[in-house]
Length: 308
Length: 104
Image 1 (spheres, rainbow over the protein chains, first blue to last red):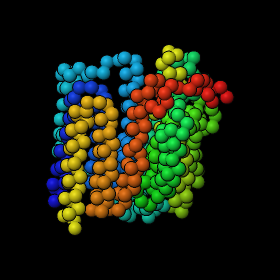
Image 2: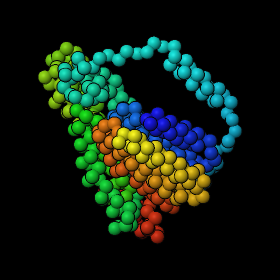
Image 3: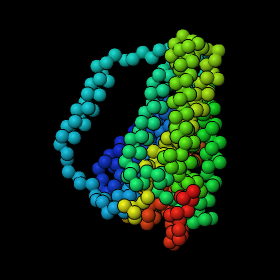
Image 4: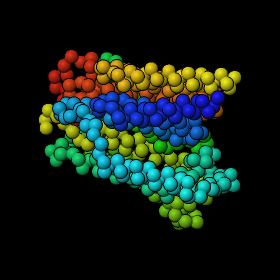
């Protein structure tokens, strides 16, 4: 029976993936892509990768959909073309097929990787969730660089701002009818999301969850409050928001240096202090990830098209 | 019991086909958006069934999806308003909204 379930799931993923790239119209492709992310979350759940399923569900449902729909709305207001020309782009097709063939070849040619046995090292890591142990202890260097990449992406986005808009609030000036459905939604959802996001970070030490998943949930509910006009988007110059952006990478680097001075090396965590250190780093990272994702989705400082 | 849960999951997944057909045919953009919301609801159901099949931890994933699936609808109605930043319930943006809270 489980084979039939997996085949149904695979057929849906392939069908939705095909429909995303094949049909006419940007809007339909956007909706299919949102659906595609949801199906991928179910696939990861089916594969037993619960942390990945959680990240995929939060990112695709909470952030990507909003981002793509806003981009589509902007194209429409600028009277840009809505039709995707459906002719074969031969060089792109050749490159894509080549990459797919190369990956397929690598799958069969390379020896099957033998994952290191975590069961010996896990008790030393300070946490019970093997994913968190790898992300924040055994391979902390990768995670540190990833947290810096998010910051670099935001700086790249801010460079798109026009000079005269630089001191304006980030993103479009959102507004909603006071007491309307949207404004109410912006007040009802955030408390639940806040508790859930903090829960995910705390639970991430021992079960499914983590800083990235929790940060994404927090970012999504913060985005709702801004889009419902309840909170106003920050400005680039506001020091508190800038501090929130660098808090996570900053705490991470400081703990790394502390490891170099007091323990075996940069980013090394002594087993006795591993749990509190990881929880502290995760909490700081969550703040930075949430703020960075919100600012990435609402975009550079903007006054709306009427002023352009 | 396990067989029944598998059958329920397959039926739920197959029912997505109807919503996918609505996304493909559409007619209006709102039709497509509502179909996507329906798929989100069914996705939560599938995840709950999978939680019963595999591991109750999956309920966290189902909850995340249930919490955030409505965000796409918020993004949709906002992007459909005349200035891309509004609310369909507003007939016209209130006077001076552009300056509200922006000068301080």
